[in-house]
Length: 172
Image (cartoon, rainbow, N blue to C red):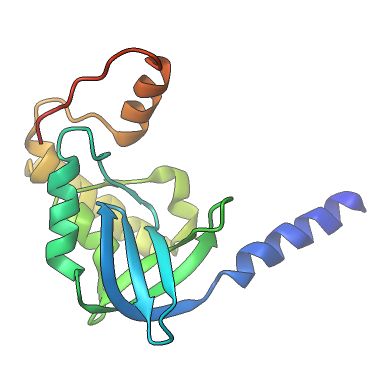
């Protein structure tokens, strides 16, 4: 019985965050995180769902951030949130004039399709994201033009292992 109640509570928390946010993009943190200002002057820091862009201090980090900025900065977007991170940040798919911006980041070779969060997408969207990544890899678009692109989760993991050791800046 405890298990059923816990499961019901967890589902209700995630469903509570299934919402639509409309607003102007006022900040780009990196290639997969933005800040949206709603018409009520509420700021939402949003993680783009099912993608993972290079970290700021790794190869292509700044390029990915700039690419996302070129697509949506200071533009009116719609965000379909589908999840909430443990610290409260909403996660969702960003649309500009009906175009899936998360997918565009993958198509442009500016982000990986994050299999870890693929269940936040519909089956059709998962297939679109997967095919977009395969196309970008095959055509060496964006970060895939680098001989050995390092996935952001591997970069983060290696940095955790090197805590206390000096880090060198990588060229972007």
